[in-house]
Amino acid sequence: MFYLDIKNKESLFRSDKFRESDSLRAKRGWGNGFDMEYNHKQLYVYKKNGNNEILKYVFVPLIYSTYAIPINEEFHWEIIDEKKKIGNYNCQKAKVEYGGRNWTPWFTNEIPLQQGPYVFYGLPGLIIKISDEKLDYDFELIQIRDFKWKELYTDKFQKKITWEDFKKLQKIFYNEPLSMFNKSEITSYDESGNKIRTNFKEMTGNIQKRIWEKNNPIEINHKVEYK
Image 1 (cartoon, rainbow, N blue to C red):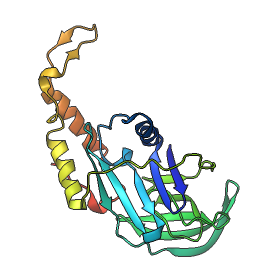
Image 2 (tube, rainbow, N blue to C red; image 1 turned 90 degrees about the vertical axis):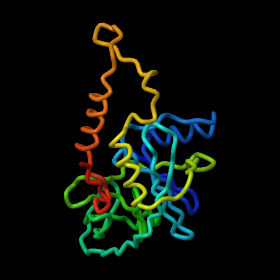
Image 3 (cartoon, rainbow, N blue to C red; image 1 turned 180 degrees about the vertical axis):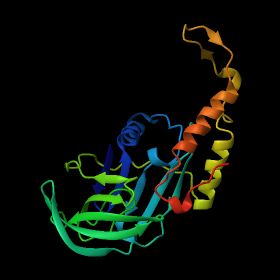
């Protein structure tokens, strides 16, 4: 479940988990913990229409390091004559290429917001549905509600980085996913609740296997090939 919060000329696309975490951070000073993975769980994008600023946030797994990648690609939309109704909205088809994928969006001019999920924006109406040709990623509007918050509560980032920087971060985490932990403080137990010796090699291998199996980012043109 993802939210696209829009307020004035700013918007923020994030998962329900990150949205709750941002709200908690604004209220108590800290949010929830981070995931064990990059990419598909970390779809967090800030957009500012005034100067067309788009920032894709990167959260380093397990630790509280946050960066932002400026998205500078232009969206060359091709609007198609084909139309259909999706839910309660009359929509029109379009096409666009982004991140090495071909996308098919459906937008409605009944909601005059040039917005959409993730990084997508710029069509003459809200994007109701968008998917890539392989259906690896498929976003569809569920409901629209009035925005009740005073602000978006956007997370802060340490600095802006490049795609190459992001690749380096992913490789570092893949090679040594437990490097930030004090291993003496990690305790393991068997099924009976008895303390056992932690197998760090096995733990590292399991994390690497999960990363390798789920290595299908939206921007496949910036995909890391793990060895």
